[in-house]
Amino acid sequence: MTAPLYPQATTAAEITANLATIQARINAACAACGREPDEVRLLPVSKTVPAERLHFAYDAGIRLLGENKVQEAYDKWQALADLDGLNWAVIGHLQSNKVKYVARFAAEFQALDSLDIAESLDRRLQQEGRSLDVFVQVNTSDEPQKYGMTPDAADAFIRALPQYNSLRLRGLMTLALFSDDHAAVRRCFVRLRELRDRLRETNPAIAELSMGMSGDFELAIAEGATTVRVGQAIFGARKTPDSEYWPGLAPENR
Ligand SMILES: *Cc1c(COP(=O)(O)O)cnc(C)c1O
Image (tube, rainbow, N blue to C red):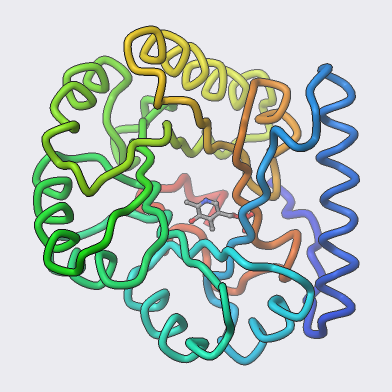
């Protein structure tokens, strides 16, 4: 797969320009499938972008940032504590020893995939006197190494969540297959949407679909994404290979 070129955005003006380009693409993707642009929330993903550069993101109007790794997110939250109204979404797999950090600073957590984590998050949130928006991560690509639960496991999992009342269930999240095969990528998004539609019949809170990244967000919007998580198209290409975040990626995508 030849990576598209994402030039580095290092000033507020460059970030503003990239945001405008992405918003235009979101608008076009919505127009193409008869949706309204305000149904799609853009979540800028800032992993590997140093805190100093995130001041420019703030100046460009960004008030919510997604981070894959908790420690990195926590450090940036501390470094940028002076930026009023800046919120953080943790979008990567969470280990139990990091739960306490998420409970302290995150506004949302998009990678919930076990009851153990739900329980310890809830306990920590009670201690902090906070609550947290959560998305259940679903593995829609059938790649065994990917995080997230199988679509079949989601029903029982979601039935068990209400006992953790600091967690506010918002919807589902997935990472599609990393592939140039659009039909195969799209099947992942369709799977998440169909699962959401089924679960929503008994649980109306499950409204959101967090799916789509720099390389595939238009396809995700066509299949109903309500949140797209976009990093490189805003901030520039990452040097850190994606296998750092998603163990088991096929070698050609490393
Ligand atoms: C990094 C990341 C993204 C954004 O990927 P880009 O290629 O930078 O757009 C989306 N979701 C998750 C879970 C990520 O870790």
